[in-house]
Amino acid sequence: MPLLVPSLTIPVNDLATDPQPLTTTPPPGPASTIDEGTYVVGVDIKPGTYRTGGPTRSTCYWFRLKDTSGELSAVIASDGTRGPATVTIKPSDRAFKTSGCMTWIKMD
Image 1 (cartoon, one colour):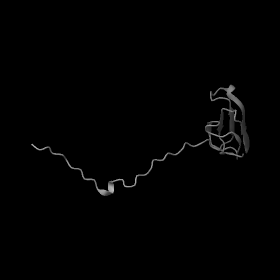
Image 2 (cartoon, rainbow, N blue to C red):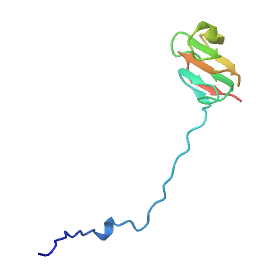
Image 3 (cartoon, one colour):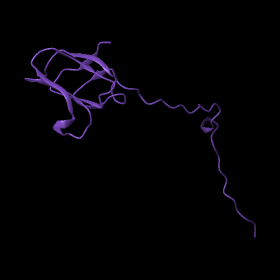
Image 4 (tube, rainbow, N blue to C red):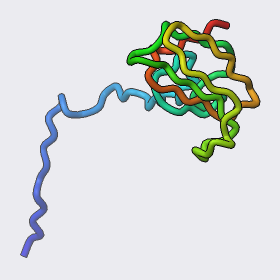
């Protein structure tokens, strides 16, 4: 008894005649703008001087942090402002937290 082998027909248009090379996008580096949240310095944001136009609500709060523990002892410096503000985030800072502020833009 003969062995029956199914046939497979592939249309010419389905054949890869010019394969595209695989490309990867490098991960983004630290940002130079900051929106609400907590950011690790050197990973999420660049150290430097940033400026905001002021609060999005009644008060704009910011915190320079030595760690992300959430403890009061982690705060290096902080402020709450009702107008434009400037802060210098140092390379030695571990993190920066902001709440209720317009976008911070790196000035240097």
